[in-house]
Structure formats: structure tokens, C-alpha cells
Amino acid sequence: QVQLAESGGGLVQPGESLRLSCAASGSIVSISLMGWYRQAPGKPRELVARSTSVGSTTYADSVKGRFTISRDNAKNTVYLQMNSLKPEDTAVYYCNVLAGGRIYWGQGTPVTVSS
Image (tube, rainbow, N blue to C red; front, side):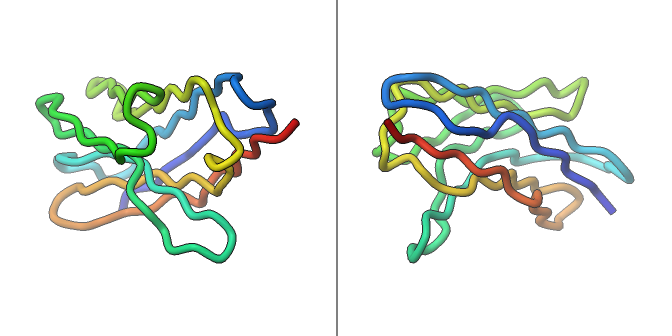
């Protein structure tokens, strides 16, 4: 089993920044993909960004140029630096990890962007 511990969410004003962290622990065999999804009220969960074990990244069009995903493989941790936040970025953000052929989800951390 793999456990995911997320942190870094909160309430910010438009234009401000936040950094999310997700640390994986437990019986980690091999982590391939690490990423972030988000779910706004009344909307389906969507991919925000993900990173492969060799650093290849994918971003949703809505966050390109504003969000940056990075990972520390030695610490089994993935980060999401979110800059120039907009009200439409308001959602619960979930860490997602593909390890040993299984998908794991974090408990979610809320991000609210409001003036």
C-alpha cells in the first residue's frame, strides 16, 4: 500500500501563488507517474499536471504558463507551484500516483481563489 500526504492548499486572492506538496510513503515499489487532478463543485475531476519518472510533463491548457509540476524522486514527493491564480482555479486538488501498476489518490486539499 502507498499512502499520500498532501499539503499546501488554502485561501488566496486572485494573482497570488500557492505551492502544493504530496509525499508518498509505504510499500513503494516503483513510482512511474505522479500528478495532480482537481475537482470544482459540480464538475468532473480533471487532470491539472503530471510528471513521469524521467521528468516528462503534461499540463492542462488552462494552467499552462502558470503552474509548474516538479518531483523529488529521492523523497517520493511531487510539487505543484501555482502562480497567477484565478477564481476558476478554485477546486479540491488531489494528488495522483501510479506505482507498481496501481493508482493511488490523496485525500484532497482545497484551494480557494477569491477576493
